[in-house]
Length: 390
Ligand SMILES: *Cc1c(COP(=O)(O)O)cnc(C)c1O
Image (cartoon, protein in one colour):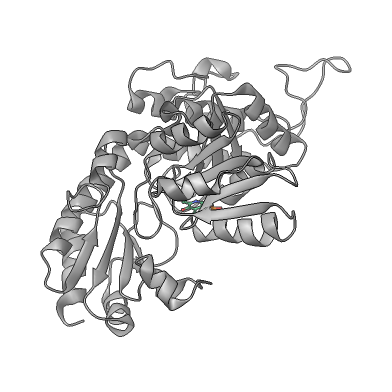
């Protein structure tokens, strides 16, 4: 399934999309809704299509497209990002051990605590992936899988993917290393090239990019892992609808164009915020002031539209600022064409205590901004008026 095209943008538009695989040479892939396929004789199928849970032409077109974008030989899609992570975690059996980043996406944390630990009874250790000593201490003889995000949420800490993969594989080459690449996308960073086993995305974010599909994806270069993922689709029943696959495919065709503008807008906004007297601090990987800027430059070609910053003041000032925004919406999620902003501590129920959160940089005045594709001048004007007397 590896990309037949040299450049990302051409793959985004054409990989898996060849018109001659459809009956009428359709340039835009058909949404194939049929759940079953007529057999010419019992057991004789056209193109191995038997039942849509096992294989669906629209879904496979999307999987071929996404595989090309991560430069992977295999790819499987799931009905949400968390369904994709759940499918991956089914590789871990009772008695085995998982190491997970302590500041992983909140939904993944709940999955680990409420399902993997509580229901499956699997041991999970949560650590800081930017600290190699914590990793060395956490690795055990029964460790089966490690999971982390290379850009953490909401404080945008950056994990050195190659260093983690090397450290873990040196300890035991059979431990599976998995990266959630949602925040940066394959346009800017391809973790498989740094020695990890699987990459996943919440396609709900940048990959689809239009805020109208929930989906997840896992890419790998190992056939055995892909066979497991197919089992999770076909036998455990975790599949997205053909219509959603079509929408996600429409999204990926502009991924490269969108990411360039997300970065351009985010950079302009980060600079504006950096110079505002109302802002205490800006966290943006393209700035040299970012503590892991060097790691970013080593492993990524650019940055998405994610900017985090601290407003001067506390919960009250932050709340006032957010409520004054007119163009930018207060909402969960990220990676859409529309600009979305949130204050994690004011909007997400955290289980840790105030002191522990403060240590991680999660305070009431922390704001996470998913910079959209509106014209940057309009976004800056909206921020400016909202900051004026907040
Ligand atoms: C949103 C998100 C997920 C979960 O994806 P859903 O599609 O909402 O299930 C996982 N990881 C990261 C980094 C996310 O932002």
